[in-house]
Every structure is written in C-alpha cells, then in structure tokens.
Length: 167
Image (cartoon, rainbow, N blue to C red; front, side, top):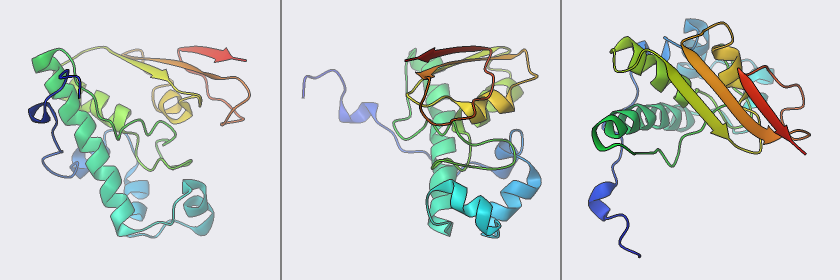
C-alpha cells in the first residue's frame, strides 16, 4: 500500500526442504516418524496440530522458505520468511505447533554450503526459543539469543547463549 514492497519482492519456496538438509538438525528417527505419520500419541499431542501429511509438507515448505530467504538476504541485504519461526522444535521432537526448526535447518544449510561460518539467531518472541537453544547448546558456531516473557511458555526453559526474560 505504501510502495515499500512490490509484488515482485515476494516469493514462494521453490520446493520442499530436502531430507539431507533436515537431517543436519533433526534425528533420522524423528524425520522418519514424521514422514510415515507414525509419531507415538504423546509426541503427536505435543505438536498442537493433528499430525497429517499436509502438516509435514507445510513444515518442509517453511524450512525451505527460510533457507531461500537466507540466500535472498545474502544477495539483497534483507529478506524474511513470514511463515518461519518454528523455534520449539528440538532435534528429536516437536512441540507447540513446531515440527521442524526452520532457523536451525537454515543455519546448518548456510554453514554446510560455506555461506557463513558463524550464525547469530535473534529470537524476539513472547516464547523462549527452547528448541533452538537445545539444538545449538554445545555449538559455538551458532549463537542463540532469545528475548521472551519470563512466565510464558515454555515453563521449563532451555539455556540459550543469551536469554533475556522479561516480566
């Protein structure tokens, strides 16, 4: 409306995220259970959505959108994935509407393809990026920063490299 962005500035992911990119972050067993829709009932309940092929496809599309957004940011200095931010997905499980951790997948993609050595993930959400913190907990090549509500979900917080919990 204001002319800041044109229709040509928007893109859709060109494909679904490849398994090889997902497996740099998530365990093979977890990805297999998602693809086969065979998560146990307790794990499926933690997702918040009914597990379906369409949901898994959605998550793979989100992850690919974040990868492509990162590549566009390298080229154009700024880009974003308006569907991304699935920061509650851990290496071996999902929760709170997050099946795959798109930021972690994109970070590993950038490192693997030598677009970046070190990554900073800035997570400004009312919820702590607990999955992202767990994924990179022992990795000095990715710095995780989460600013979130202190008494909001998740009630058991993981430890990011820097957490700022606001009242």
